Length: 211
Image (spheres, helix red, strand yellow):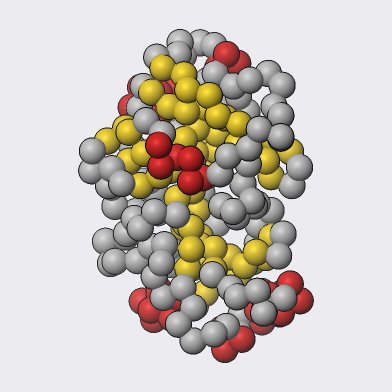
């Protein structure tokens, strides 16, 4: 499996605040002419509307009231006030919403800017945790000991990891710049974690409908 996505540092979103938007007019939520020159990153979700007061646990099925496959109109019922914007992935804009769940800043991606569109991917760099204590910032070696054999993918020179025992959960891997794209490709093809520095940690988590 190969990821074709930008990391949080390169993700770009045009954001506008929409409060109580009608669920039958999704095209009014996002600007009709996305402009890549107006950019924000996932860090802007830190000031997005708060949907819940508590930080939810991270599971393979959901992050609090947000779940892969959920319709936009259903997310709006759970979280009536959202930031709507555009995220650029390999040069193409994709509709997203930004929100906060407790202390977690979250970006939710959709396939289309319509109310019947379903959540494609949920991303957060905040320290949300699974019931066994893993999430962004955790040591990769500790996750491997608990979850088993890792699988790696590379997208735009960024390294990602996922596990067959936790379908739907993926993490970016915090790789130093000294490990170039070719070396990251070798990690992807061989799965050899000895090519990574000791103490390597995972970064943002990405929750899909399944890996």
